[in-house]
Image 1 (cartoon, rainbow, N blue to C red):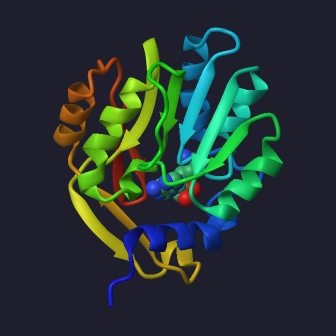
Image 2 (tube, rainbow, N blue to C red; image 1 turned 90 degrees about the horizontal axis):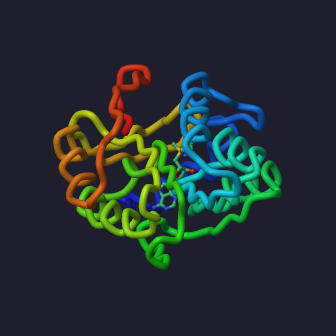
Length: 200
Ligand SMILES: C[S@@+](CC[C@H](N)C(=O)[O-])C[C@H]1O[C@@H](n2cnc3c(N)ncnc32)[C@H](O)[C@@H]1O
């Protein structure tokens, strides 16, 4: 029997949370991304971090700069750590694809390395929904796929636990982002071992 992909992802992060990111973990590329986002935010901005993980480094940097951060993740272990590591932020344990918010609720939305864990058929609708939660002039910081691929690894990070991903190609993400009514102002590629992600 093939396990439910979302259950595999949730369990994977429950088990590999600290292996994926240490309490003080701050991969070099994140520093530049958060710096650029911070430069675009007015003081006291409301920021939603979808698939926030353990809250480090993104939610922590944004909260430390005085912004009101809400993080969403469906891994209880990731969220437990986030609540401990970033006590100034609010955290919601939920499937981000099921999340509903009022229109124009946030000044910025961050979604890093998380959309690629949603089944492909959920991704365009997810992007369309989150775009409505942005205020006019708001910002989305998103990593997505670069090349179409759906599959799993039986022993992710060597932690003895499987992980599952589903990603479309770069052209599809560009089209979905634009169909959501957003304008792409910056786009680049991010190398991640043998894989490349797109950054918007
Ligand atoms: C690769 S980690 C990235 C964490 C963080 N965004 C970062 O870049 O450090 C992906 C995170 O997305 C979460 N996630 C995956 N699918 C999700 C879903 N459907 N709803 C909520 N969280 C999800 C996982 O639990 C995990 O914490």
